[in-house]
Amino acid sequence: MVKPVRKAVLPVAGMGTRFLPATKAVPKEMLPVVDKPVVQYAVEEAMKAGIEQFIFVTGRGKHIIEDHFDHAYELEALLRERGKTEALNGLLEDLPVTGSVSFTRQQRPLGLGHAVWSARHLVGDEPFAVLLPDDLMIGEPSCMAQMIEAYHRVGGGVIVAAEEKPLEDVSRYGVITPGVVRGDAIEVKSVIEKPKPEAAPSRLCVIGRYILQPEIFAELDKHETGAGGEIQLTDAMARLIGRMPFHGVKTNCARFDCGDKVGFLQANVAVGLTRPDIAPSLRKIIDQFTRS
Ligand code: G1P
Image (spheres, rainbow, N blue to C red):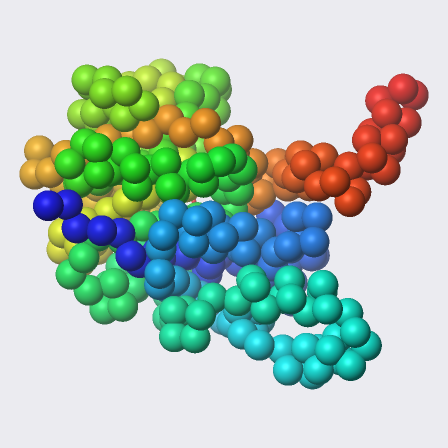
């Protein structure tokens, strides 16, 4: 029997230098897409996939992420007093249940592999999901729900979300050598972090969603550095190939790279257009800009 995926690790320690000066005092994960911080989308996506525990890997200056996933008593009291029931209920519904959220610090910015390794004691000996909040995934069922469904179908192991990218962009991603195709799941024969386009095994890239097995921690324990001198999650996953099944899943979700200025603006427009409360006015504004 394949063990269920109950825990998710959310690495949120990055400094967000691409978004300065906005991210000088505000974590990049707290920048809003329409009216919700980027990180909340990842938590909601994981909740929809049945994840029960959320482990944030934070760093200095990220404490407002903790506050965001807690009660705000003064605000709640004020909304109650003023009869703003809808806003109040919205806040309360979004809160993860008490005890389901935990925080640990990465302490030093040594790479994604190191961030995930920092959560090893909180994850323990069970499979877990990793969601990189910068990658905002919009779709139904949620991206992680589609991955967990595939995880059970292919018999466990490691699952990554995968997307075809133009050849000139592959050097920004982990890139897969694809093997046997099983529906939406593609066997991963090897994976390489940020190859030059001429060295890329394919255009099939890993995007920021993973289901991993606890065996990954023994690989990350080695603290071997790879691309960019960082401890890469991709390298640790590559070393598990042959020891357990490893698949890439092409989901039907749209991905927005909120770590990039244009991607972030695109996410705001795309999510805004799905929102009945603002879509009509937003559409008018877009029309004005595109006409001139
Ligand atoms: C990370 C991973 C990379 C993956 C990407 C997806 O890179 O290292 O393998 O393809 O996320 O967004 P980063 O964007 O942190 O450089």
